[in-house]
Amino acid sequence: MSHLLHLDSSARSASFSRELSARFAEIWRAANPGAGYTYRDVAADPVPPIGQAWTEICDALLRNGITDPAGYASVVKTPEQREAWAIIEPLLAELLAADVVLIGAPMYNFSIPATLKLWIDQVTFPKMSLAGKAFVVAGARGGTYLPGTPREPVDHHERYLRDFFAGHYDVHDVTFLHSELTNALVDPRLSPRDPDRIASREQALLDAEKLASAGREA
Image (tube, rainbow, N blue to C red; front, side):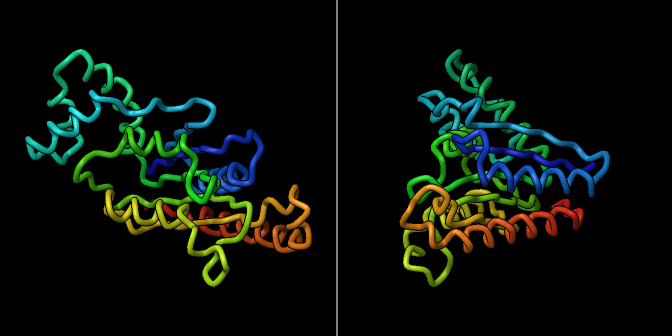
């Protein structure tokens, strides 16, 4: 049975990235009746930052050459490490159980929300491969950072996630859905671009529906 892990990280309770991720999840679940579904809101329920014990677990994995997550718990020894593992284990289990990982990720200050980075840090270990899983990122950006635009060089949002998934997880099956120019709603300087904002949102929602309705499992 296929399984969808759905994360949201926007600080806004009603946001463009949440709208996009919700639309994908709704259509995907309809296209995959009986499939598993796990939802986690890392903005409303933040993951704590990693600490010393987490680094000790990583060091032990490297020393012992353990790359299979099934063996991670074997290096957990001290009370502090067990406390860290109690945070890691459920997050990691959700990630490993998923065939498709859906991440609602707005751009904040040219990159991803800190709450999403905290989750990434907790569930990422040395030489950990997630090859075979599919990742979908539902993004929202206040301006436009598309190829050929003036701000393309400072896009550390899509670029970071794409590089991270490939470099750490060996995952190249990643689709980005972006609702751009969202600040045209609130910034008078961008208000002339509101038709472009509307078009970008509508296209992103349409792309989310098409991708999800294909019944894509991995």
